[in-house]
Structures are given as structure tokens and as C-alpha cells.
Image 1 (cartoon, one colour):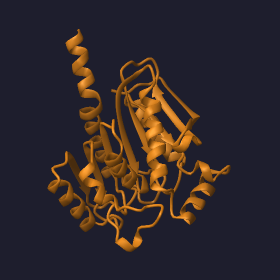
Image 2: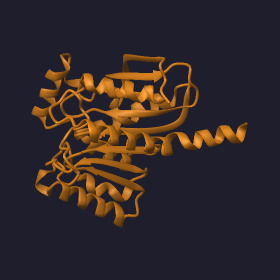
Image 3: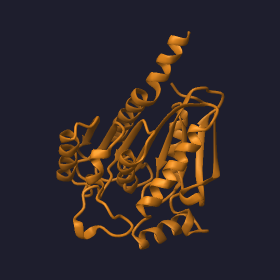
Image 4: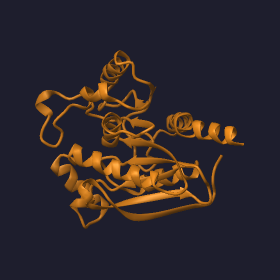
Length: 258
């Protein structure tokens, strides 16, 4: 079911340490009991495709917010800020966790919220979605879309990323969906196998879907790696997962109340 009446706007929110950051918020109009989704943008930046993803979620009945994780490097255009972020090696993990936590709280505090919050991240945002699934209380679903560097060598850790994300897995607090392309190099299929083995050994609630003929970033229609057939099926998997984790219980509560 799609919702034609939407509102989408750039807002300011208080992120990690109370810092003001930009965010893009979209939601269906006039709908009660709406689940929330935090969209964690990819390393190419807080770009037009990120806002399209946020509106796509709103069309499917979610209130979605995409925090601009590179806001503090501005002012400037999103691509200039993304270049500055890459030069710095990305944003500190603790800062990202704080920004996502603030975004989740913003969604949870709205009068139309059903109280359930998920996250979805792409590329570096996929790694960050996995990370916040381990670090934050109160999340109900996490989607990692081709997140690279979940597994890293000890020598690749630094003050911005002091702990390998894969080592956080024992603390994972929420169901996880993983979407991967078998032609990807980061993560490559062997890394995906290793991540899945850890999740299985830890008894976590997860499901992985892998796509032949697809590499990194294959959902992004404005990039050369876009693969429409695989992307269509991948989005179906995402929405089925969010339906199960973010909407189902609320629907059951409404039936009981009625």
C-alpha cells in the first residue's frame, strides 16, 4: 500500500553532544501509528538519492529521517562535504552513534509515532547500521546494505574507529537484515560469509540476501552500479522485513483494542 500524501523537508536536529546538524525528514500525511526509520547515508554523501530513499520509505508508511552525518564539516554543498569527510577517513563512530540516537529519538517523540524505530544504511552507512544495532537500546530493526569494513584488520583501527564492528556482534540488540551483491569487493562474498558465521554462532536474529550480477551500491538508480532487477527484489526484502519488525505488532494491538 502506498501513501500519496507526503511531506518532506530539511530540518535541524540536535545530534551527538547537542551539535546542530541538518537532516531530511519525510512522512505520510494524516496517518497514525507510524513506525520510524533512520536512513544512514552512504559515503558518497547526503545526496539526492538519500532524500529519494527517505521519501520512498514515507510512501510505504514510515516516518523517515536522514541525518547529514557530514554537517559539521560545512557549510558547503553535500559533495564538497563528502569529499572532506573522505579526506578525514569518515566520521568518528561515537559521533555517528550519537547522531543516529538523536534521529531515532526525534522520530519516537512525534505524536504520530507507534514507538517502533528501525535503521537502514548503505555502504559506510551499512556498517554503521550494523554498529548501532549493537550499540543502541530501543531499536527494533536494522538493515545493512552492503556495509564494508565490518571486518577489519587490527592495524586498520584508529581513534575514529577504535573497535571492529564485527567484535560488537555479541551486543547486537535487534533483528538484522543484510543485502549484498556477489560482485562487491567491500564486503566481498567471503567477508559476508564470515559475518554470517559470527551472527549464527551468536544466535542472532538475522537474514541475509545475496545477489548475483550486482556489486556495490546496486540500489542507487543514479550510479553506474545500479541493477534494476536485483534492486527491485532487494527493496521487497527490505519492506517485508520492516513490515515484520516495525508494523506487525502495532497492527495486532489495534485488532485487540478493536
